[in-house]
Structures are given as structure tokens and as C-alpha cells.
Length: 121
Length: 111
Image (cartoon, rainbow over all chains, first blue to last red; front, side, top):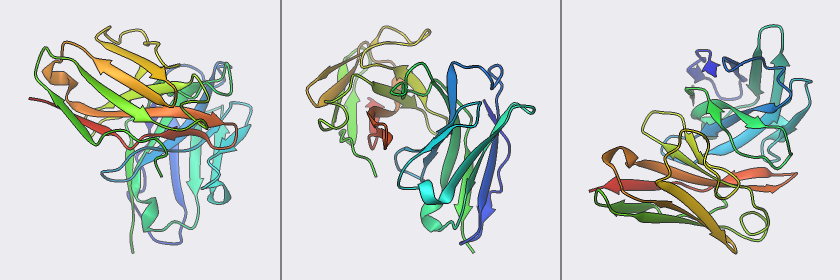
């Protein structure tokens, strides 16, 4: 997976936007979900949400009100929007793939390189 | 917001074996056989080491093994090598709502 260069710096209350280009085959592969995971500096990982090529999404309840993940099958990409960001959203954001053979197949077997997004005025 | 509790750090000498544990609850580790382990070197993306408690993806050496007992999952690395020095994360399926949670990470130092 290849992550497009991100904005780097986003102001508080604005919207964070990131895109991931899928390099491991077609995003329409029915065998996978495509997800976003973030990691605040020096901290652990947090799953944000995932999407199927059909557009079906599921999100972390703690972020659901501010998150939208979309897919563009013509460009083999999927994207993340996180609204009303605060300093707590400062993190490295990873895109990743996980199997869709079962809803509980919650392991991520292919990752993008990560993009650091800092929220600051 | 890590729900899984691993040790903050472990260490071992080359050639030795170490075990990293990850304690959860009946709502995650204890309730499902969908525990995964990841290795992350500084500045890099995590790499999947183990899925479904004990299964290794193709290309992961058999020096890495894992198991689960009750609410605790464990990752064992045998024959420690210098390149094993990294952070290790456990994760578990938690049901259809929250979906997946990760542990806080364990820093492995190879002495």
C-alpha cells in the first residue's frame, strides 16, 4: 500500500484528509477490507475504521461522529476524512488491509508507510 | 485507549528466548480466537507476525510463536537476534461494535 503525502500540519477544528493508493492488487478484490489506523507519537495503535470496495464502512465508535472513509475504485484508492481535529488527533496515520473472509478477521497484513499529521495552530 | 495490557519492556540476550504477554478480558482476548501480534521497528509500519492466536503469515520465521490461555495471549521469540529489537503489539477482535483493540506495545531490547 502506498500513502499519498499528507498535509503534514492541520489547524485545530479543521478537517484532516488522507488518501491511500492500493499497490497490492485491485481494491475491488472481494477478499479484503481497507482500513485506517493511527499512532500518536510514542504511543500505541488505534483502529479508526475500514471500508469494503462496495462502499460499506464500519468505524471505531469513539471516532465515528467525526470520521468518513470513502473508496474510489477507478483510482484504486481509499480516503480518510477526520473532522473537527484537535491536538489529540496528532498521530502517524497508516492505511492497511485486512481480510474480509469473516467480520472478526481483524488482522492487518499489509500496511502503508504512514504519514505524520500534526494538529497545531 | 489501549484495552490490552502488555509489559512496557522486555530484554534478552542473543540466542535466548523471551515471552511477551498480553492480558485482556473476556470481551476481547478471552472471548475470541482472533489475537494478532505485530512487530514495529522505529519509523516503520507494523508488520504482522501472528494472526488467529498462533498462525504465522508466509515469510515469518518459526522463531516466532504464540498462544493463548484464558484472557492472556503470549508471543514467544526464540533464538533472539539483534534485528528482533523492536516494539511488539498485540491486538484482539472485540466484537462487531468496537471491532479491534491494540495493546500499548512492548519494547524488546536485545542486549
